Length: 498
Image (cartoon, rainbow, N blue to C red; front, side, top):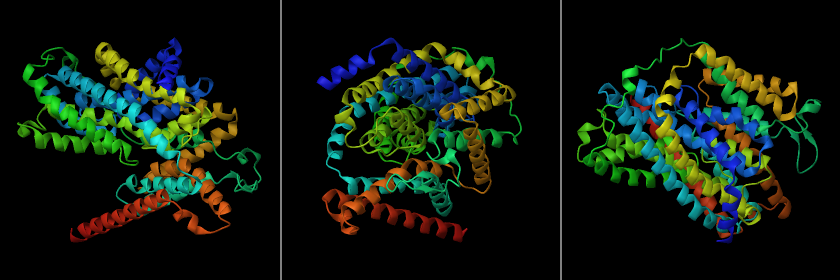
């Protein structure tokens, strides 16, 4: 209770709520514009947090993260183009409602469901994260290495249809994480006598190239699509819910919130899986399954509740064990480290008030998201009509400014361009860049804990089976690998029969 009160006192000041609302505003805009992602928004504005405190910067980033999940539904509902991948399920029933002249009803339902899912996950985070942290305090160096190794199995979940390409991409990220001074021996690795590489490659620099500039390069070869929204689609006709409609969405929202939290806690799954799984469950439970795909409010409520319920849940493995649940949260890991907060077993004991301020703040992030949505949804919807020709140079300018701001070095801009070209080439050959990101984030932690464990045991490998926690994580890694291999075999058999 003392930590709760101290966290509340840290949270309740004007700058925190100003940055929170600024992040929400930006998140909705980036989420609503097709092709712009939450990851892109966080990457672009992460350098902006360098001068902020830990609570202020996290309120800003959480605002982007939560609002981006909701913002993707705007374009999905209005123009049948999901602003974010997990809004694809929302599109199935959202756009048919727009065709019926009920776009504002669909947008209102998406906002209500997103807010409910977000608050539900924030409450779960507040009550369960400290308990998980207490368990994490029992872990030593070998246990922490196995946690990191288990986190690397996420690569399989984000590799798309080709596991081999995902492993190659993840290995490339691990290699990049070794550049610079070796923390254990003090020697240098892969710096090629370049003084700028002594400290390695900053996470922000690589992210800007991998996700932001590479996206600009990819868009440069595509035709501009007309995303003009019919003004009649934004009228308020039929935007009030009937008693029957309110009653019909309660059960799918509660079930979808639980599904979203469970999936969010499991690293590497993500909001897209939660959204589609919840949509399927809602259809199975519905009294009117024939309406799904034709404009069902139950379908929209299930999808939007689930993908926002993921947001708070993904922070549980991040804060307690340092395992990012998805790409956006992986970038937040960098924000924590920038502020001197190393995720892991001791985070809650050493920085308890800050952690409680962040967890309580997530509840207010979702409340203010609801208020902004109520007032600005009609205006947010117009953002998707911004000309690509105007938007692209602004993004490039932010990319270069963000890369330069890390170390005030032109060399970092060159590195960013190199990563952009690498990511662009990877996309041409069917490689995902998310495994590269995971390799970058987890590489250093994995290597250091592995080598430190062997030093403690004089090179004896039995240290990795020296405790019940080690055995549990070895079991989980083994089961995960077996399931991955089994899934790949089934996929290859199906492809062979076709």
